[in-house]
Amino acid sequence: MKLRSDGAELRDRIIRSLRAQGFRVRDGAILPPKELSKERIRELHKTAVEHRIERARDSLFRAEKDLLRYIASGHEVVPSRISPRLVEVLPGSEEELLFRYASLHWSIPVSSGYGRRLRFLVLDDHNGKLIGLIGLGDPVFSLQPRDAWIGWTSSERKKRLANVMDAFVLGAVPPYSFLLCGKLVAMLAASDTVRRAFRRKYGGVRSVIRRKVHDGRLALITTTSALGRSSVYNRLRLGDRLLYQSVGFTKGFGEFHFSNGLYGAITEFVEKHCEPTAKQERWGVGFRNRREVIRKCLRALGLSSDWLYHGIKREVFVIPLARNCREFLRGEHSRLQWYHHSEAQIFEYFRDRWMLPRAGRDQRYRTFEAESYRLWRAP
Image (cartoon, rainbow, N blue to C red):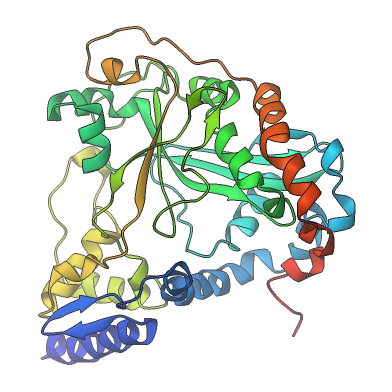
């Protein structure tokens, strides 16, 4: 009886929430809006973004004044004197607070990354202001466009997936975003600095499940565009080298549309009425991840677990860090033939190719006020 009463209320809340976000509920299925412009996709994510901001208030509200010191106003940015530098984010640091704070301004909800994480701030040494963020985390095990591009078998993927990371956040903050610095941040993800930081952090570390010692080689980075086709990553080159290669689109699967205040109620319901799927004992006890929690909940409520398919497809990009990246990931080569790109080389190319021409013809960056970046007002 308790399951029935708890379930009926939660079922109605889920359906109301999906409709409020703009999804259509038809014959036991959910469908995205018919017109999926970039602005419409932002609107679909708006509720989840607002919920994340509200959840972060208690931990970041008091720090906001200090964190805003890292956000430039337009008059503080001098394009000819910009000097970017990658700063690795360490746990418990002020840089970590700034990373969390800035990521709340993204137009889609930014996850914390899965498993291994490697995060960077891109700072402007000229004025000490924040240019952008790079966040790398464990990739999903199965991603059809990536796997088809590599051409690996299931056994090869198990052996070499540890040599791949996924960029879960990648972009510039204003006013640098007006100067196309989103492209700069994307390019810096492919730098020697990132690859070497990965080796320092994970080389020699033993994996939890397979107990295998990681060799510390980062061969490939993947990422997906937030808003359908990407204008930032497409045709992004460093000289003759195409840095970001489009390999297809995701199927539109995930849980962002349940991350808007409902997830707590979903978790409470599942812990009371459902059993976790058996898993490797080294992972500990409990449910595997958020998706398992939501899937179990939907099934218990008599709803289709296909509701995790939200239909918002993202373009998938691969960023090879070595010439023989695919051969290495397939186990055909044992050594990687690295590309070598320093931060300075990348910025010099970006500055002359994109930034200075944009600064000459578009002055919008000058009018940006750092105060407009504030998330919370004092009560």
